Amino acid sequence: APEGEIQDEAPADHVKFVSGTPTDFFSDFKVKREQTRREEIEYVRTILNQDGIDEVQISQAQDTILAITEAMEKELTVEGLLEAKGFSPVAAVFHPGSANIIVGTESLTDEQVTQIVDIVVREGGIAMEDINIIPYYGQ
Image: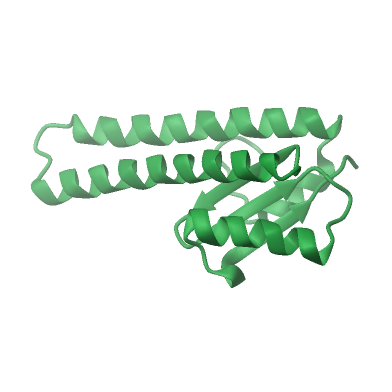
């Protein structure tokens, strides 16, 4: 899509069109995720640096930075724990109230899904029904 155009696809939809090995996908994904988060934080900081910003705007901007930072922390923690359980490669994306977990495999057993859900619920504070697990292995 052209830059700046908003896409309303579910996160899983673009996975099907990624070429290359799963490892490439996961490393590219993590780099892009980190760049996006940095850009979001930088954008909020520019708001904080504007003249005439009021207390409510300052508070909202600080809350936004805190939410982004907390999501990043949860993603790293969950990815580390899932990798320790043998899920590799893996990528986690947290949003307020939901999580997407992409696992580099063709399929997952019920037991594996339960392990993933348990970790995301415990470490991410996300309700079971708000966790989306996406197996991904090439095209």
